Length: 604
Image 1 (cartoon, rainbow, N blue to C red):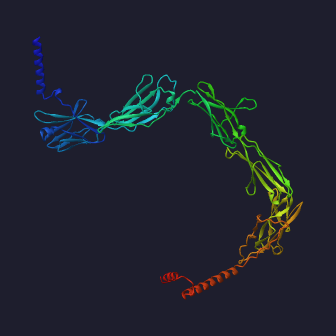
Image 2 (cartoon, rainbow, N blue to C red; image 1 turned 90 degrees about the vertical axis):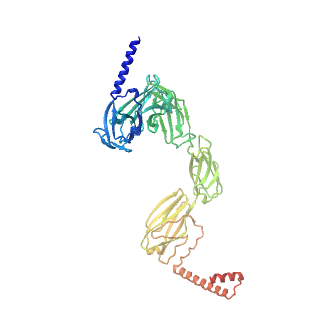
Image 3 (cartoon, rainbow, N blue to C red; image 1 turned 90 degrees about the horizontal axis):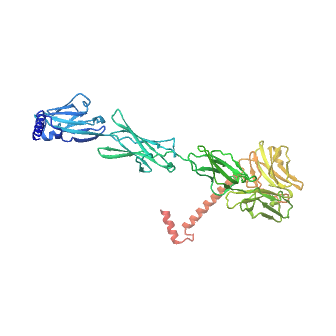
C-alpha cells in the first residue's frame, strides 16, 4: 500500500514542477480579479497594480478575456501606449503616467475581464473584472381592458409590465393595493421573459395572472423594477391600474334626483342601479292608480327615466327590473313612491266683479295642494300686499279701487311652489282721462305721434277732432290708449288737438296745445311735453270732467335767465368789495384774534 502512494506523490510533484517551468501559474494561485463598476456610456478606469509593486514598467500588455479567450488590445512601451486593431482601437487611452488604462463609452458588451501583464523573466499579471450597469426606463404597465370574470377557473391575465433598456436584467415585483404578490398555485402566477437588444441592453416583460374576486373591482395593481447601479440598489414603480371585474347582479334598487321635496316644474331623474358588473338591462314601470298594474315607462337611457317638467300626474309607485343578459335572470327592486308636490289652478270668486262707487266687494281665493297652503292678496299696479289670507274685503269703493288684484297661493315648506291668479275689479263710471290739458313742443311740417289715455267701466272708446290715422290698444280691461299720427300745420298750431273718451255713462275730453320750438325755449316742466316728432301722455296725473283745470306756466327765455345770472354775479362782487373795505377800516365787529390771524394770512 505504501509504494502506490509514493508513486502518486512523485508524479504530482513532477507535474507541478513542469507547470512552473512553463511559466503557467496554477489556478489555485490566481487571486480574485479586482472589481470595477461603471454605468453604460461612462468611462472605466482600469488601474494596473503591477506599477505599484514593480515601479515604472516600460513594457506592459493589456488583454481582454472573453469566454476564456485572451485578446491583446493595448501595448505600453517606454510610457507610450498604442491600441491594437479591433473593437477597442478608438476607445482606449493612458492616464496616470501609464498606470491606468481608460476605456470610454462603456457598453454592456464590455462586461468582461481585463488584465495587464508585464514582461519580466517571471511575468506577472493583474486581472480586473469590469461590471456594467444601466438603469431601466420607467416601467410601462397595461391593464387587461377586456375584464376578468370572477367565475374563471384558472388565473386570468391582469396586467403586463415592461421595463426597457436595463442592464443587467432587473427584478420585477407585483403589488396589489400596496402589498407584494407572490406565486400561489391556482391563484397567482407571474410569467417573465427578457429580450436582448442589439445594444446589449435587456427589455423585461412580466405578465401577472390571477384569480380575482368581486372585492377586487377597485383594486390597484402596479409593478416595481429593482436594479443595481454603482451607487447602490434602486427601484422604479409604474402607475397604478384597475382591471374590470365581472360578477353577477345580486341586488337592484332605485334612486331619485334631486333628493328631497319635489315640485311641479322640476327636472326629476329616476335611476335604476345594480351591484353587478356589467350592469343588467333595466326597465322602469309605474303602477297604474286605477288598475294597480305596473306599466312600463319609456326611458332615455338604460335605467334612466327623466321627468321634465315634473307634474303631479307623475306621482305614484315606481319599480325597476334588472335582467342579467348572461344568466337571463330578472331581479326586481323594491317599489318606491314618488311624490310631486303641486298647487292647482286658483279659483277666484266672483271671477269678473263689477261694482258701483260706494259699494263693497268680497273676493275669495281657493286652490288645492299636496301641502298646506298660504294665501295673500296684492294690488297689481303697486305690488302692495293688501291681505294675508284667502279672503279680501273692499269697502266704500272709489274709482281708484278699479283695476287688477292678484291672489297668490304658495307652499311655505317648498320654496318656489306657488300659483297666482289676476282678477280685474270694474267700477262703473264715465271715462277718466290721463290729463286734462298738455302742451307739446313741435316743429312745423313734421309728423307727430300724439297719445291719449282713458279708463272707465264700461270700457271707453277714444275719438279725435282731427281727421287722421288713429289706433287703439288696451292697457287692461278698463284702460285704453289711442295714438294719432298727424302732420303739424299752421291751423293745428292755432286750434290744438282734442281727444274725447266716451262710454254709456258719459264722456271726457283732453286738449293738446301745439307750440313751436325755438332756440331760446327752455326745457318745459313736468306738466309740458317737448318733442319734435312724438308725444306720449303720461298717466300719472289723472283728470276727470269735474277736476279743476290748472294754467300751465309759460316757458322763460334763455336770454332772460343769462342776464339774471350776470346781474347776480355783479351784485355779489360789489358786496364782497364793500365787506372787505369795511373790514380793513375796522368797521366790522370781528374779534381781535381773528383780525390778527386774517392779517397774517394776508401778509403771507
